[in-house]
Amino acid sequence: MANNMTGRYPVTQKYLMTRGQALNFPAQYFNASFKRDEVYGMVIDIPMAADVLTTMVCFINGAANLYFNNGAEYSGASQKYRNLVQAAHNLVANASPLVAKAQKTTKFDLPTGRTNFVFLLTKGGVYKVEIQAGIIPEDEPEKRSIYVLYQRVLGELRNCQLKDDAEQRKAAK
Image 1: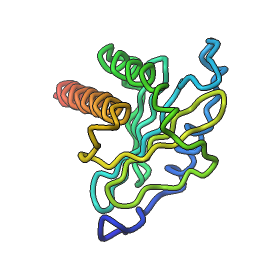
Image 2: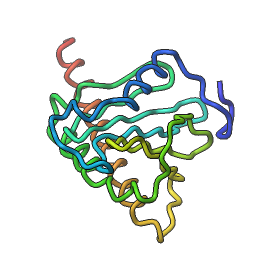
Image 3: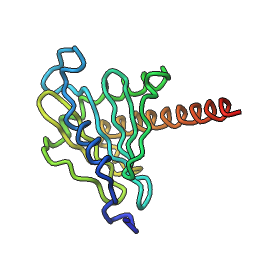
Image 4: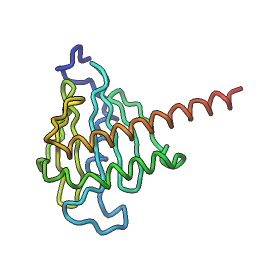
């Protein structure tokens, strides 16, 4: 278990496999002709606490899922909640300008500390950008706008979770 914000996060095999599948998800699935550097999906690693790492996966079709380093996940909400679909689509549709600021990569290491890793999926490969949570310089508008957009998706996912929990409690009565 990571006991400080600079250590490695403990992860399950399920988490690593799911994250790996997302990072290798093919563009062909979307029945659209993407330009070589056009983003069709994003995998965003977001440290939440000293021992909690969340990976948010979003695609151009509005799908958005959360995967946690302990193997837990929250998925399928895009099939029920239109606001989530719109937020996730908006995030991915606006991510292509960030490719110019990113480094092409074939290494998909996990973040340490509070750094968010943003992986941009394109037909031309996967690109990586690091974002320091909460301290994005004014002269990096692409990072700032993507950060705001993915915080919006996280907020929508949280709203969906709360609605699902309320429905489950209601059904249990």
